[in-house]
Image (cartoon, rainbow, N blue to C red; front, side, top):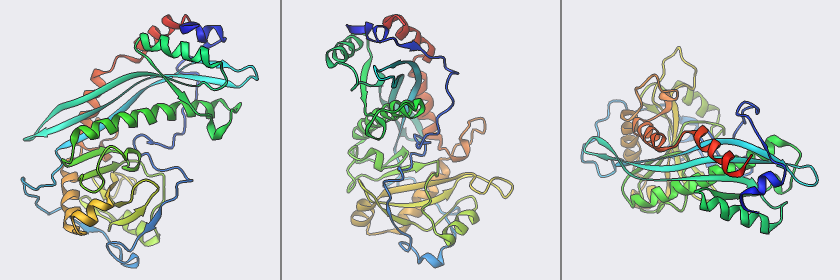
Length: 351
């Protein structure tokens, strides 16, 4: 059957404006906080007793240029695409088809100059395939592969098909995001044990680094999960530019991390959470390699403040780092235009 699979199963094109925006769990790829069923264990009295929390000022700290743990590589990923078609099963369940271009990139800080060191890109088609005959799916996947696309097989949301198109569509987007995370892990593996900054949570990228030996820090811009107690929230809102909260410990499913909040930007007239990011580092590295050296967290926080994005025209400048912004721009420049890829896909599948 090959590329005729969609047309032979009654697939329809979908306009870009035909869907309401999804309420994703992942800035969630920008903040990618965990799902509610992955509750971590939180130890708030980790750096300081929980009832004695107050802002820690690191704004005046000087970090030596030759500090061993100064981040040298910055990693970002990108998923650019949309739902381009939909078809139905014999029972009438809607099956969305998402087309994406995904990629990951490593930016190297070479004596103050940011240079692209490595990147990878793929074009993928995400859909739930279980309701269809496997010989047809295999033929479709092979034909797509010949044309430079890879079929990603999605799991049904909550383990079963549903008539809720939004939920089915979200499953295809999450599958595409998961594959982008796999590419980010490849990018991490290119960097070895050098100090690294990644855009997002570390748990989503486990397997891409050695949690005992790699000085990696995750930068989380979106905050969908409440990790704090009342005194913690008071400290959070009291943060000024260049101040952080005390660190707390998160015991999670795949990796234990040490985490804290840091204000990169904002004044009293901004929103209370404006310019605040959450940072996390692998707990095994912090415990066994550094012996819980709190000065490491202070120096790292100071450097993160220095890396903050100052381009106010950039939409997420208040919570972004300039090297990560550069990584995103470099990767975006390598991508093909979305409409170009979509029109080629329509032509190939005769939709």
